[in-house]
Image (cartoon, rainbow, N blue to C red; front, side, top):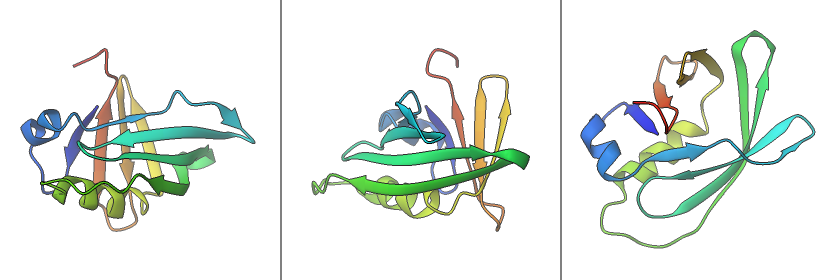
Length: 110
């Protein structure tokens, strides 16, 4: 579950059921992931690298128009720029070179 994204409260993220799923099939060291921010389904490839680096690629999305697209648009723009990761307990934090972050918690943990 996405619990922290600049510009959005935790309550907004929960209300939109914002999440990523990293349980996808691994190919060539990559994880096939998916995301949902309240409207469209997104998929991507994610590769965790040495030194806390992450590479996100091959992002695609369904293209439905919904009433509130602000979260989804913001997530898509920022998610593609993430280059670093940290894991602390049940929390995954992604960050970019400018210090922007997004934080996730395992769905079975709050």
